[in-house]
Amino acid sequence: MASQTNNFKLLEEEAIQESSPHAISEIENGVRGQVRVFEFTGDTIELYLTRLMDMLVSLLGGESPQDSADQ
Image (cartoon, rainbow, N blue to C red):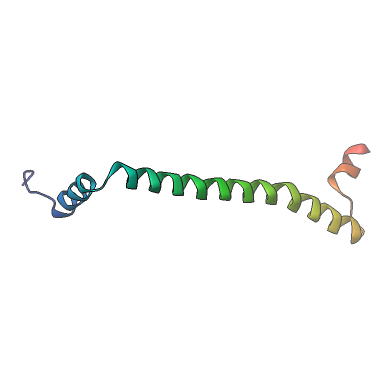
């Protein structure tokens, strides 16, 4: 039973052999570009969302974490 072939695995290997190295590098570049966009978006949200939340807390009359640390 261990010698059964997986048709999907064979199809994948065939597709890889038929594709050009140029096509594979284009896919890699596309994925890397998308990852960079997600990293940038995450960094931006991390930077500004925390400041926005602190400002909203201050506007509503609460203490920001910086105020409680000063005491």
